[in-house]
Amino acid sequence: MRLRLATLLVVAIVAALPAAAQEYRIDPSHSSANFIVRHMLVSNVNGRFAKMSGNLYYDEKAPEKSWVKAVIDASSVNTDNADRDKHLRSADFFEVEKHPQITFESKRVEKRGDDFAAFGTLTMKGVAREIELPFEFLGKVKDPRGRIRAGFEATTVLNRKDYGINWSRMMDTGGAVVSDNVKISLQIEAVEVPPESTEKAN
Image (cartoon, rainbow, N blue to C red):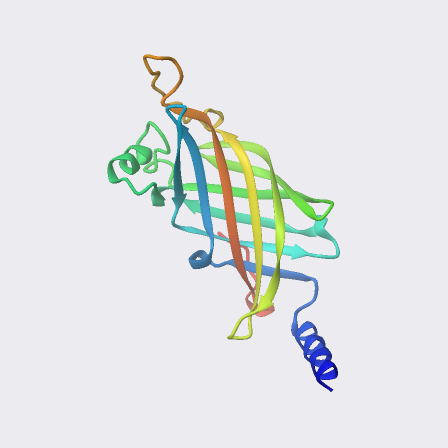
């Protein structure tokens, strides 16, 4: 009897989930854009952007139909050091007064085994470049308000100088104070967009 009830419960939960194809809006309070950069060759500085928005469309049965458009507020950069964050907002780095947003818009999505890769345009500090963004679909669930939420995780490495972020200082012993390569980690939780209000991020 207990096994039958458990089976019926699982069936009810699965039946309540939407079709495989669904548009979602990024939930900024449960998502993060993080980065790690090497400092003086011996340690890592961790940072994040506190404000992110956007929409995505995910089709489990036809991943090639999926897309994502995300916007990061460059001025929200935070490394838990006020002086350093002020420097990062300056023309030496993100120059947020002229370039307030970092954006990514996919052009296609490919499935690779159990994971995926989004190919699209990353624009930062006024420079647009085509990148490959590997990502993993973490699953979906119905929240207490009855909305479907989906989770994604993406990681990649970028060369900051590709985007005109060229500030550097050499140490007396050799090597740069700040490395060129930056590790990027995106943790995305997104909530379904009701069909009647479906819209892409601006």
